[in-house]
Structures are given as structure tokens and as C-alpha cells.
Length: 456
Image (spheres, rainbow, N blue to C red):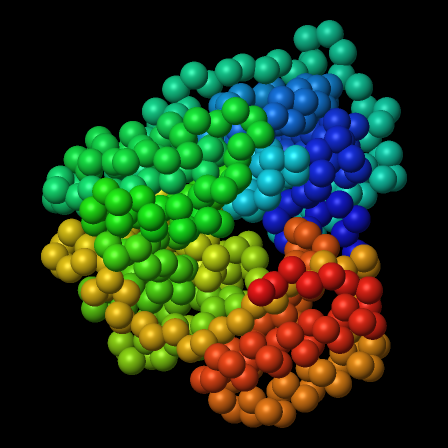
């Protein structure tokens, strides 16, 4: 069955327009509550959110739906997505809900779910929730009197998560002597992230810590690393750390203001873990979007890279299936399964900072472990998701690019799981060549599929 609501990372769209409406949110709450009820005991679901204005209405709708099914709600307020996964697991709740559209602009919002153990729901569970909603199987189930659910606010959720993050950092190290520029994207980590770094001893220059409901990700955060780049140089900082709106991803810049993306972070961490003998099965899990330079760096250090489809949930599924403990995406999602069940920007940042402090090296020195091959990504906004193989002109442009690159590069074409975008990624040894080939494909898509190019 094809999912009608859920994408690769929950449900996402413009707030107050289908499917991101209060009506759907309430139905999702009812479906989630129904699925988590087992036995006669009281059940509890955690709800957290980022700083978007629309979070209030969606939160209340979810609470109404969950309580209407006789399940209690634990409200934690603004908290990073990985923080909600942690609270769900540590408080032995039956499920967790995150209201966030991650790196999207404030007018969008999203809803994603965690199971009782803090892991994102598998496809089959999401399909079951959709079935309950669209078949109206649970519409007649209406607990009454004392069986209706209640909502409670967990006032110390941020403190619990701060302690958890600090415990993921080696006890014999601190961050004294480091000057760090931190950009919280005016998002969910605006309180917890600076607190963690400062309590560990760092001098923190704070950016993106004044959310107003409409400025999340607006010219700040991991989508705009040039902001911390300039701040690092201006403040003569040792490095910069940029989170996204829900703080499940992180991007660095080194002491010279150069971006250090997720692939380089994975290379730094994987090679360090290989040296210490702590990388499970000597294997790193990445997605098909990761640069071939990552494979080369990890192989040189004695390990290997396994690739999955795009989406951190697929990375985690592969890790759980084979017992791996490190995985991630080029975008900055990193999963350290020894520490948390999902991508956690601050856990990732602390792992890199620990390596930096223990080695005595600068971030620019650490990043040299990987040399990236030239890579070009062009996005084309499309009206509908057509089967590309059924559009001969586009299919031919892709085939031509593959023939010209041969074994010296690759072509990856995929639709975004969260936006109406066709992503065209080419990798090879000649930046000029792959740029030209990528734009040839994009032009074919614009001409024959009615799209509009958003890439450079």
C-alpha cells in the first residue's frame, strides 16, 4: 500500500493546509493512542515541539485526539527531536510525538512519531495508522467519565535532556579553552544547546537563540553555515556549530570558517572509532547521497561503508538490522546508537569536540582525513511526481551523463521525501563537467516535466 500522509520523516506540509491541519492532527492523535493501548493500565504519550507559531494549534489538536481515546499526555514544550525520543524512552512512555518541520521555513510544520523505545515508526505502523484514520475504524470508540485521558506538563524535561547530553561526553574531558560559535536556528535547541556547552566549560558565542514563532531557520542554522563562518572569523573562535530547527542535525565550520559537512564529520568519527576498536563490525552506514571520498577514507582506515536510501530512519533500520553503531547523512544527521536512538545534533557535536580535545588537533586538521570528490546538487521544483523512466527526454539526459562519467563518477536522481522537489546529484572528478551534465538533466526536467530549477 502507498502511504497517503506519511513521507520519509513523518507528515509535513504548510500548516493549516491539508494534511497539516488540526483535523488530521486530532485523528493522528486518536490513531496513535489506539495503537499504543495494551492492557488495562493507564497509557502515556509524550508530545514536544519546536518554536513554530503553528505548533500551538497542532499540539492542542493532538492532545485532544489522544485524550479522547483514554490515553494521557506528557507535554514537554520546545525540545529537540532527539530530546523527545530520549524523554519517551527514559520515562517509559508508550509513544512520543514531535511537532516540527525540521529545516523547513516557519509556515510549514510536521508531525512524526517515536515508539516506546525512542525509535521512529516503521512503514507498516504508519500504514496501519493511516488505515485507522481513513477507514474510520475507531470513530465509534469514545471513552467516557474517568476513562478520558489527562494532560500533564513535564517542567524538568529540558534539564533531564541537558544531563543526558553531558553524560554522552567523556567524563575525563571538558571544553575549557574552547571558544565556540553556536547557531541554534531560533529553533528547539535555543536553551539546551548553549547550556550544555557552557556547563562543560566552553566560551559560547550564541546565535539564533531568540525565537519568535516565525524566525526559525530564517537566515540561520545549519542551512546557512555562512553565518557561523563569518562569526567564527570575526570572534577568532576555534570552530562553529550550526543546528537545524529541531536540532537533529549539525554542521560545523573550522577555525578558518570552512564548512565541515556530515560526510566529513562521519569520516572523523568513524576513523577515530576504528582506531579505538569501537566501530561495530568496522562498518559505517551512510546514504546514497554521501560522497565517494567518505568510502575511500573509511576503507583506508580499515573499515567499510554500507549505503542506504536517503532518510535517517533507513540508516537506523540498517544499523539495527546488523548491529552497527554509527551512521548518518551528508546533511548532518548522525546517529550514535551507543548514545541515542535517533539523529542528535548535540550528541554528534560533542563526539567531534571530544576527538578534538583528546587529539589536540584543530577541526581543519581533523577534517583532512577525507578528501571529497566534486559533487553537484540541483533541485527542480515539480508539479507532480512522474515516473522519470517514462519521460524519454529526461531518461536520455540521465543516460548521456552516466555514459560520459563511466566509472569516474555517478548520477543519482530522486524525489525529496518532504518537498515537491526532484533532486539531481552528480559526482565526479571534474567539477565543470558534472555541473554541465547536472544542468542538462535539470533543463530536460523543466522542459518536459514542467518544473522550475532551484539549483545554482
